[in-house]
Amino acid sequence: MTIDPTQLADTIRAHEAAQGQPVSRLGYFCAPFRPTSGPLSDKVIKVYRGLPDAAALDRLAAAHDDYVAALRQTGVPLPETDFRLLPLDGRPIPVIVQAALPESALMRPRMQAEDRESTLAMMQAAGQVIARFWNAADQIPARIGFHPSIRNFAVLDGEAIFYDTFPPLIHYSRQEMGRMLLLFSDKRLMRLIGPLMRRRVTGIQDEWYSAPETLVGLVGSACRLRPEYEQDYLNWGRDFATREMPRWADEAIAGMQQAPRLPGYWTSFRKLLGLQGEPNL
Image (cartoon, rainbow, N blue to C red):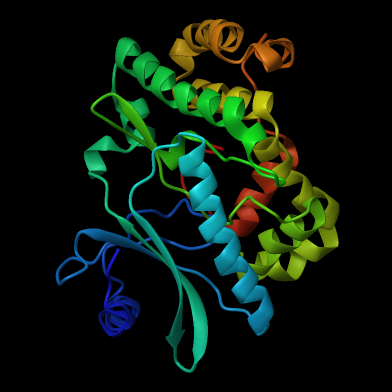
């Protein structure tokens, strides 16, 4: 992806001045936006908090490059994605630029609006990406995770496309990733209070590093979005685990005997993070 860094910096400053066109308020680390005009109007831009530690930022950039490469290697469809440390106001800031997907393809609003057959077809498309990733993840010689929630997919022409690459779930230890969840939180309150609950904050990531739990999490999200189809989604999930993820089927099926629920501490964190909309992880 060829992007003029001056144009990118100017676009970000203009957005900060005018608040542009946010495309998401559900993000944990930033609110992505798509410029309404200009050379980057076909891109989604994600601006994250900077850090005073230059070595940590360099490590983050390298990890992101490795994570995108690993996702592609394991067969996860991604839009064109570019990570850079952009000098803004005299300091490097992590910025991700992605090719924009049609808003009409975003899985979460589609799951809320469409009928049973269509939502089950989207679940199948997303499930295939989850299974493809985990069945190939042994190829990656590093600790690697995946966060395939409904809000992180678009479904276009029957294919699920994943678009959430931050934080890069590769190389970092469990404790390091727990610290990242606090360091890069967009909410000051979370950065202040979060360290007092470090064990629970650290535990948020555990689902992302577990093959059966990522599938159970997808089904739980669907059940919360469309409770009238709860049994259909549970039946789909149990059957899918047996067919497509046999190594983890027993554990996944055990988690889908009834609609999976979010743990209470996570809904509390959502309030601290100021996230909008129904809980959907």
